[in-house]
Image 1: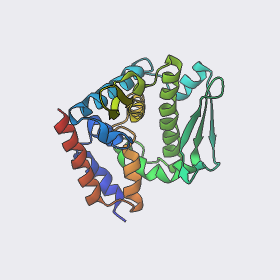
Image 2: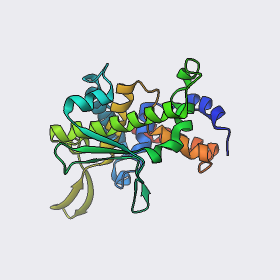
Image 3: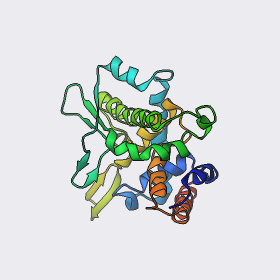
Image 4: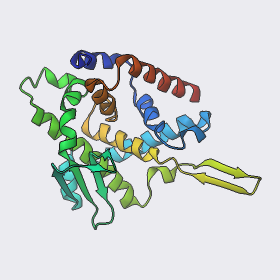
Length: 238
């Protein structure tokens, strides 16, 4: 297992800009390979823009205050967030009025060290007495903010992916053409909203990779190679 605390400092020099980490998120979309290379930057930049713009209206407010103002209910539970062998960290239920958010704290506890090493480097000197409980609270707020953005999309009646141009996924002759939206754009926008509102140094999806590095599921060398792929994809799209 790598010495993660040291890696946390090194991550500052990998050039993990919002655009690079957004591109990483975009690669998770099932239709990623259907996106023309010269349109990748369009989906990344527009998605980031929408998240940042939504965050402007929330500056200076805590995420839990926003939930109270909107009358939204959230639950922080130690119940398992496992669903069909997938471990969920948070989810929003749009079938309820108003929508309800559940954050699975048990799934977040193992990420406290990842948060401390990557997200709170500047805070560590000022918060020498910080504990895992502090990091868990911050992680809960990150996930509440992420789901709150999806609520903002729901309230507006339009998710980010539906606002952007769909991509062609199937064509038969000239008349039969099937197009679909890039769903992961909504996730990119939610990451951007969360980063701007909470003053994070990186888009929060970096925590997924930090956790894999910490647990030894991903090597530093493999991660560095992935970063270079994301960067080259971004560069080729410009």
